[in-house]
Image 1 (cartoon, rainbow, N blue to C red):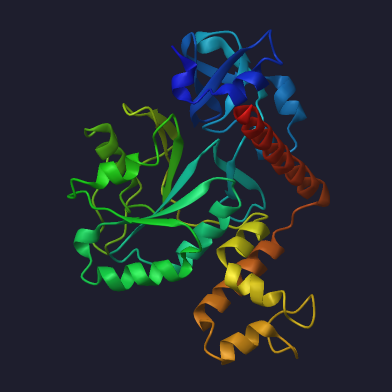
Image 2 (image 1 turned 135 degrees about the vertical axis):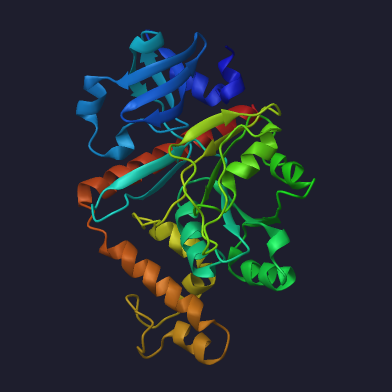
Length: 349
């Protein structure tokens, strides 16, 4: 097995060289505490070493689908000893009431944020996805699915454009012969993309189009036009074109988890206005000299968008994250930034 076909580029090769006694591999799926990995020796079923688990202070320190890891052993006795520094990571608050984070996928180049144009269409939810996506380090691409079920496509594209803030937008349909071509343009050269979205938006259907067959199971919609869960776990799949995709289960909720930078990026026009407010801690709720409220009153800012910004900001601030965790996360993303910059400098030499 040639691991370079799974994205093991010079950046990760240089990082792996620091562990000559271990073998590099990539995590392609995870289920019930066990990981399926791919290395030069083939496929393995791996468990996390006791030492790595002991050193982990949060879920960010444990392997996730897409991670490049250093492992020992082979076959069903492989053990993951180290995780190589990530270039991107998509993190959300774990579902339910627990105040913990969940790593959805790592080392992604593109995040396909899928939203169907039937009853799943929801601009406020898309703003939430964009906020978390911009915080990941990967490039978000908005994928509007099921165009064949939409009678007002131009209007809805225009609405999405108003909140996209620099993210590409593509429209697709399972019945459109050009759908696979549109998606593959983001997957050339060994790139990795993850498909994210609610149940029933067509993520598995789109991956099947990329695979050229009905490889992944798909389900129809319920009577209320909402989706059924089809994918039950995250899995990285290699495509014939050389790219890789990560299929993820549909998300009933996408909780904010220290995504303040992503919120600022997703609502960049509001962030720019806020920088001109008289008070640095302005809540944009009636304080004198509030530039955001002035823009709202002058019709330069949509009230629904401002309410969404306030809601996501408040939710993000409510998450009880200890200072130690926040410092650790900042260190991890500084590490990601440094290794990415070093890789770019090495390419220019």
